[in-house]
Length: 95
Image (tube, rainbow, N blue to C red):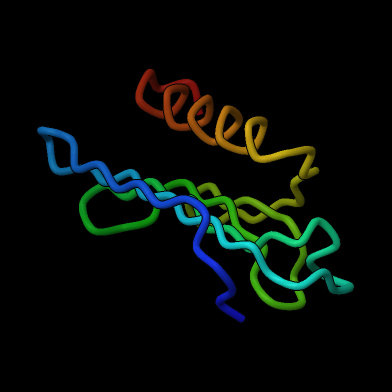
Protein backbone atom coordinates (compact mmCIF):
# COMPACT_ATOMS: atom_id res chain seq x y z
CA UNK A 1 0.00 0.00 0.00
CA UNK A 2 1.91 3.03 -1.22
CA UNK A 3 -0.59 5.88 -1.63
CA UNK A 4 0.44 9.47 -2.31
CA UNK A 5 3.80 10.56 -0.94
CA UNK A 6 3.20 13.58 1.31
CA UNK A 7 6.62 14.00 2.87
CA UNK A 8 10.12 12.76 2.19
CA UNK A 9 13.39 13.80 3.76
CA UNK A 10 16.75 12.08 3.84
CA UNK A 11 19.79 13.47 5.58
CA UNK A 12 23.23 11.90 5.62
CA UNK A 13 25.21 13.31 8.51
CA UNK A 14 28.97 13.97 8.33
CA UNK A 15 29.69 10.76 10.29
CA UNK A 16 27.63 8.70 7.81
CA UNK A 17 24.51 8.34 9.98
CA UNK A 18 21.28 8.48 7.98
CA UNK A 19 17.95 9.99 9.01
CA UNK A 20 15.18 9.17 6.53
CA UNK A 21 11.47 9.94 6.82
CA UNK A 22 8.64 8.97 4.46
CA UNK A 23 4.94 9.64 4.98
CA UNK A 24 2.18 8.65 2.54
CA UNK A 25 -1.54 9.45 2.41
CA UNK A 26 -3.39 6.12 2.10
CA UNK A 27 -7.02 5.04 2.29
CA UNK A 28 -8.35 4.74 5.83
CA UNK A 29 -8.36 1.13 6.99
CA UNK A 30 -8.42 -0.90 10.18
CA UNK A 31 -4.64 -0.64 10.68
CA UNK A 32 -4.32 2.86 9.14
CA UNK A 33 -7.25 4.60 10.85
CA UNK A 34 -5.51 7.98 10.46
CA UNK A 35 -5.07 7.45 6.69
CA UNK A 36 -1.28 7.60 6.82
CA UNK A 37 1.52 5.14 6.24
CA UNK A 38 4.90 6.18 7.58
CA UNK A 39 8.47 5.05 7.99
CA UNK A 40 11.01 7.07 9.95
CA UNK A 41 14.43 5.55 10.44
CA UNK A 42 17.79 6.41 11.98
CA UNK A 43 20.65 4.30 10.64
CA UNK A 44 24.17 4.06 12.03
CA UNK A 45 26.87 1.86 10.49
CA UNK A 46 24.31 0.38 8.05
CA UNK A 47 22.02 -0.80 10.88
CA UNK A 48 18.64 0.58 11.91
CA UNK A 49 19.00 1.92 15.43
CA UNK A 50 15.64 3.71 15.73
CA UNK A 51 12.56 3.27 13.59
CA UNK A 52 8.95 4.43 13.75
CA UNK A 53 6.47 2.82 11.36
CA UNK A 54 3.06 1.29 10.91
CA UNK A 55 3.81 -1.74 8.76
CA UNK A 56 0.89 -3.75 7.45
CA UNK A 57 -1.13 -5.43 10.22
CA UNK A 58 1.28 -4.27 12.95
CA UNK A 59 -0.22 -0.86 13.73
CA UNK A 60 1.76 2.11 15.01
CA UNK A 61 4.99 1.05 16.68
CA UNK A 62 8.64 1.93 17.14
CA UNK A 63 11.93 0.09 17.16
CA UNK A 64 15.03 0.66 19.22
CA UNK A 65 17.73 -1.74 18.05
CA UNK A 66 16.11 -5.21 18.40
CA UNK A 67 13.33 -4.04 20.75
CA UNK A 68 9.85 -3.20 19.39
CA UNK A 69 7.10 -1.37 21.29
CA UNK A 70 3.75 0.19 20.51
CA UNK A 71 3.52 3.88 19.64
CA UNK A 72 0.52 6.13 20.15
CA UNK A 73 0.11 8.14 16.96
CA UNK A 74 -1.35 11.59 17.65
CA UNK A 75 -0.47 13.56 14.51
CA UNK A 76 2.39 13.99 12.03
CA UNK A 77 4.04 16.86 13.92
CA UNK A 78 4.15 14.83 17.13
CA UNK A 79 5.41 11.76 15.26
CA UNK A 80 8.35 13.68 13.82
CA UNK A 81 9.06 15.41 17.16
CA UNK A 82 9.03 12.09 19.05
CA UNK A 83 11.30 10.46 16.46
CA UNK A 84 13.84 13.29 16.54
CA UNK A 85 13.71 13.29 20.34
CA UNK A 86 14.68 9.60 20.41
CA UNK A 87 17.45 10.18 17.85
CA UNK A 88 18.91 12.99 19.96
CA UNK A 89 18.66 10.89 23.14
CA UNK A 90 20.53 8.08 21.38
CA UNK A 91 23.25 10.48 20.22
CA UNK A 92 23.67 11.72 23.82
CA UNK A 93 23.86 8.14 25.12
CA UNK A 94 20.55 8.39 26.96
CA UNK A 95 18.85 5.51 25.13
